[in-house]
Image (tube, rainbow, N blue to C red; front, side):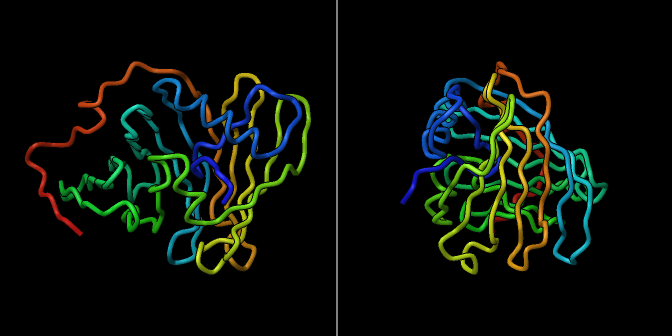
Length: 214
């Protein structure tokens, strides 16, 4: 099975030519090199079929395989945050002050029907979906890759499209297409930067929160 990076963290490396596999491997190495932060904005389709704007801040500590996602929009999840670890995903609900804990393989975001479990490690998403990648286009400063799962029904989507900046090697945009070809997510990355992050800060949640294991 081809080795790929996680859905939100696929990046282009420094080469201007090469296979999709080459770019994905180099981008994975870049992301693992140091902690980083970024903002992600765009639209997602909710479980009810409605499209809603989403905005979030992402903090990654690759050495520990920990990612923290803080939501700013939509209103239904604003001020919630998600902590992704190698084994579990902790979803803090601001209004109820609850921490809902899911095993990674069953993780989802309350209110959006969105899974972020692939953000913790780079290989896991590809192994699960069996994605095959191809180079779909190049232009000055960026490249577009298309990934298709071996079994769309099992994966839950028909394909993903990724726009990747070449220098520095940071993500620009990704789109996820549903089984009927509809756009399920269309997200843009911005303000990507290396950051000084502490494990205890990324794992923190209110000490008086109610913890619920799923």
